[in-house]
Image 1 (cartoon, rainbow, N blue to C red):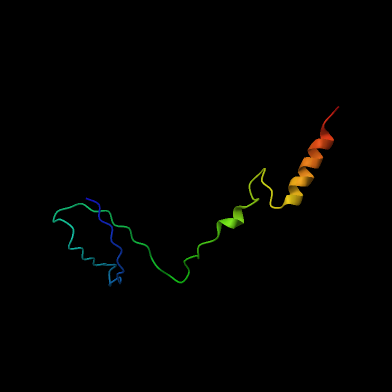
Image 2: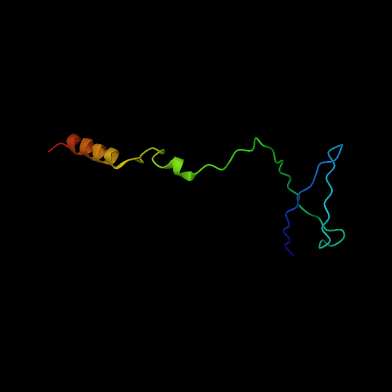
Length: 77
């Protein structure tokens, strides 16, 4: 059985968090993940920032043209 449920909880003194999931069978072993929500959590960044960033990639068509021109000039005939 796979059960996924997202809940929001308030941390009590001593770091205690209470969750109530009545759909869980008594005695079951569960995996719990806790993520602290703060104002400093970074906002997701766009993947567009990776365009042209890797070696061998080009950010603009002019860079491609310049690279091809340099390669052609290096050829020996």
